[in-house]
Image (cartoon, rainbow, N blue to C red):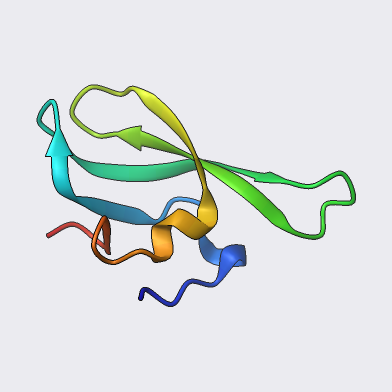
Amino acid sequence: MNRINPDKLLQSKWTAVTPQQRERHFIVTKVIRDDQDEHVVEVVLQAVLTRKDYPLAWRELKDDSVWQMGWK
């Protein structure tokens, strides 16, 4: 399981273990917080190859069978 500090997610780099449509490398471009701006709710990942944005619950990045930290 990946250890993640939610305050340091912005601009972090991620690699999809199983790429979809040749999209393997991603950057966190946006961090969405709750109404009180206390807790991170979700992030927006942008595919480096296609520049498509994908919203994702930030805790899903902890699953190391799906995501790896950094670009591999």
